[in-house]
Length: 324
Ligand code: RIB
Ligand code: CA
Image (cartoon, rainbow, N blue to C red):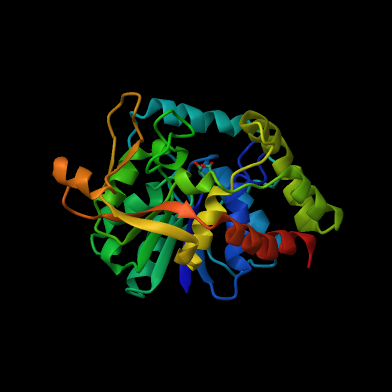
């Protein structure tokens, strides 16, 4: 399968969420997947940092052949001041990968998305593991973009459970609710891999430490980059573990049988109130009937075969980090 990964990778920024980079490793170490490109978006960290982090990861993996592009630097709506403040505060965080400035077309992820998808209609799966700003901008700029995609598999939202960044909202959609709204209205074939299933996955610090003990540059980079986030989030969750949100979405893009999917109509709360960024999922037919939402615009994941995912992650990501 041919995929583009749209991502906000923070592995390389201390105190940032390292998790996108595990998903990138999973894709690049999966023989059934061809990664046509990686497009970076604002999110966990500013896209300037995310681009530099992705570049460093590709060098460590010896995969500089994979096209890498930097995209949107801010959410679509300049009035989203809470989100913009969250993002801009992250310019001050310590960077352990060298900062790189993209040259020429490398700074235009949106054109890369449009050109790649339109030149292979019906063939490209877009796996989005960050906010949807690049994707929504591509949809706005090229009306035929959404229908030319094979499908979009998104890490984002919640179907039935509470949020993570806010009581009602998951981070990727919250960070750019207007973009998520455009994507849900786009007519593209959408699969939403939300917190309902992602929260059942776990990565423990001991697993990363064990990989680093093998002494590979990749394993040591991952451990150094991830340690602060394990302290912040592992401590907060009480289990010490991180959730493998983005890796699960990547795995579902490769094998949908890992999750149970339900047809749904999903709409975004784009108001400015406390529920902004909430994904409201009408996957129960009686709710679509009562609230007059007869259409289906997405499939939402409600259950996951977590042991099968964990084994895949062990073989293809932890194995790669250990140099096996
Ligand atoms: O809410 C989970 C999402 O935000 C994931 O994409 C992860 O990278 C986090 O920062
Ligand atoms: Ca992410």
